[in-house]
Amino acid sequence: QVQLVGSGGGLVQAGGSLRLSCAASGSTRSITVIGWSRQAPGKQRELVADINSGGNRNYADSVKGRFTISRDNAKNTLYLQMNSLKPEDTAVYYCHALLRSGSAYWGQGIQVTVSS
Image (cartoon, rainbow, N blue to C red; front, side, top):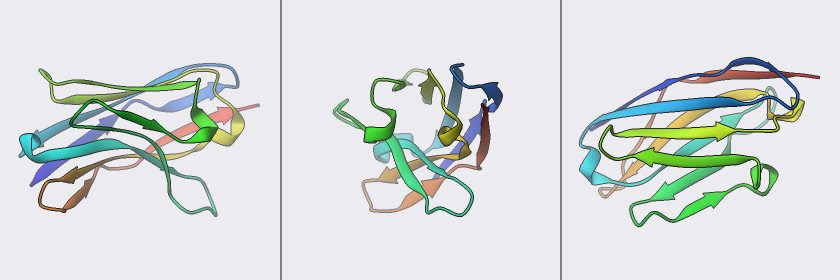
């Protein structure tokens, strides 16, 4: 099992920046992919960015060039640096992890609100 605890988020004006963090604990060595998804009101949850055990990063087209996913293996912490934020980035953000076993885990939602 893996426990994911997210932090960060809040209210920011368009063009601003925020950083989300996700602290992982438990069977972290079993994680194959870890990343961030988001869900805006009335919309389906969508992948924002993820990173696999090989260090390969994957981004949604809508955030490429603005968001950066990174991890600190020593701290078992995942980050999402969000720059040039837009009102359409407003959503609840979730950290998620996929284990070697195929099990998936989710952190609690983090509200990000971007005002125009």
